[in-house]
Length: 301
Image (cartoon, rainbow, N blue to C red; front, side, top):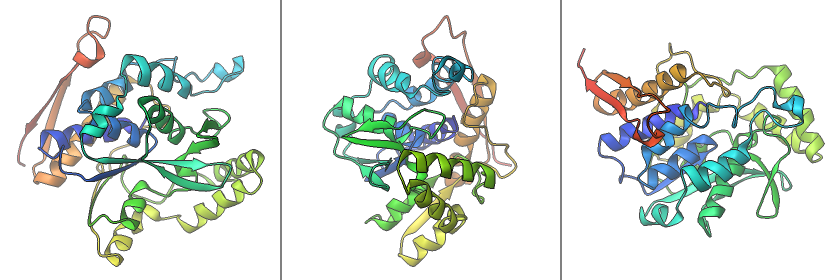
């Protein structure tokens, strides 16, 4: 659910007039979902889904494994949100003129892939779902284009690395937490390593090597960009801000996270320390897309 931070960041970019300032966008997991709505011109659709549909038990239910299901139901995201309540429309994304690259992990071939050749709105929805399919918590890998797939983070350190390695001359990196060494414990990594090896022989070992070689990847992105002659600006929440968890469902914390992302972009790109105020009407009384009283009041300090 940390994607709510980058959703707030993208709204800030649009408010500052940068909505049409990109040639390519690279995203993984929730970041790719937010980018798709951003390019469709529906930035508030991306934000409000976090505190509306995704905060409910239809999406996250810690008791669902007791009934034979998974903690996170990403099929709900694909079949309900992407297809019905907040439909993805490939024609709108194509009209933006920006190429969206969605990062996924190909389980069968043990490699990360960048998907951009979407054939339909459904194909786009399935690519975004595949790139967000969390190991263990979302259940067995999802099938996409004849391959089993998982979240891009299994074998890709950061989507910005793909932009740096590509033809991009200027790279803007949006981080959902302050850059630091990964905090996943050694025990967690070993458990995930064992689980991935059960999915496909050697996948866990590839993941393990990936963890070892990119242990401080967020700290070295700027160094890699400099070596390749790329101009890079990295935007992140304040280091003292306590990041939210992947399964956060508290509406107040989700809104505060969106506020943190919004303010981070304003401060980094304008030098102004903003103060934002948000207010929500009763969710039962108004559609989620109408809940837009998220107003910024720039104040220099």
